[in-house]
Picture 1: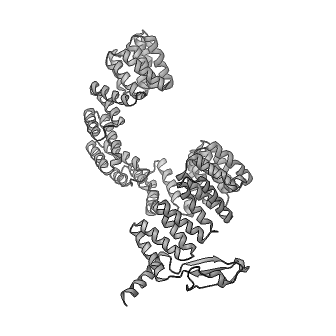
Picture 2: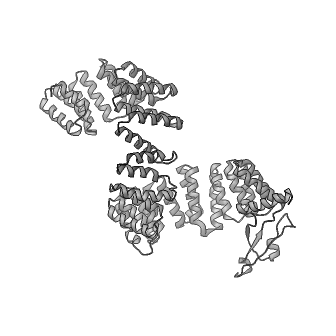
Picture 3: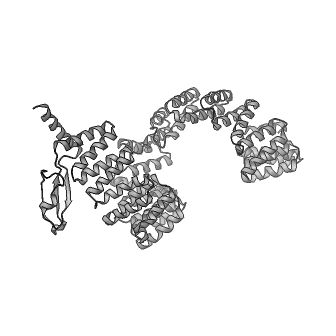
Length: 596
């Protein structure tokens, strides 16, 4: 076998694997003869295989299979395009597929060309491929649905409406599927107003079609417009009370509105029917769990598990219920099963860590938490748990080493890890180390307000008031209306220096920016106390306590009351504070100063 024969043999086998060689193309027959129906435009020598369906009601409804005319040139383009795609050379793959699609009147090949082009994010290439697909198959609804993400990308929302209307008119039986796909694309490419507006402009929605109204209600719920979503789904449920999709959406909306009990009542009967879908029963179990009816929820999920023991959602729900019941061993068994199935949501690893932590197997918990993938939405929680276990063991050095490693591995999150480590050090009464760490971090992030503010707060605890004032004034130079910085500097100046009038002005400005903030009210009361205006001090401190019963507010008000000669009331106030937090340092120091 010579080299060319070998090449074409191997190429043929490859194309079979990628699903193009011998790929049947279904062409709808028309009233003309079968020979006319299967003729391949632009390639009169192409071989075709025609097979009439065994059962066809009429010539018009018959389908025939046509095999692509795989000339050496066409085969070369397709093969080379696939190889280029596997190598990540998307641009080359797109261009080669486009050449192949131009050679034959093949909807399948034009579709494949458009799909590959969409990966390139190249507007010109995508538009060219889609135009070819429309040219080859102008009555194929999928081409118009595939156009919609590209049109959204171009912000051609009129074009989106036109394309979706065209697809829905061509394939009315697929309206639920198409509307769901379009809605998903809209959530990624359009604003809330644009997305809802596009659905509202569709012909089906204008005509009051239930499928379109359902899609709109679901999209409204996605955007947390629960009142609107509920108003739209409720009539649909009334019209079709046995429609499970409607019931599930309405129950989910009610749950998210904090009305889970109504959701339970809505679907309870339907969920108990013999023919109830797994999705409806799962929603029912979820609502029961949300209502705190764990035993009933477990019964629902266990029944589902008995019928379909590999259902991931059910395994996950049972694992969560076991954690809620503090049964780490049972939780571990469910999450282990989930892991064996691949865990596509990347959450089971984290919950395995929680299970082992609950079981007291801290070494195993550390391994699981460290194994949670970076792209998992549980990653940050896993890191927090990992660090907390080390801290509970007294292994501060290991915790710091882990955070340092995280800064190296995830430089885009390094700033947050610096702040996290500083807070850990401060909690461990190692404020100087925290101060030094943040000072080092500022070398990398000199413009970070978060670092400046955090260092200022730690500087106060180690009597570096000059650094505190410098950092807070740096923030205020950039943002004169930063209420947090104004309050922090004002409170420190009145509490730690005799610059009370200057402090008062800053705190009053902070309150103008954020009226009613309890911490700012406390600062204002304290500033008046330091200025000797005890009535005003009492007034604002009581206002702060009405908003939030913070122990430090109690300590301050008690001191003001004592100084006003209301010692009995002051003692009652301090005792109230001790009941809330017997170890509060400010409260204990205040009472000690007054010999209590």
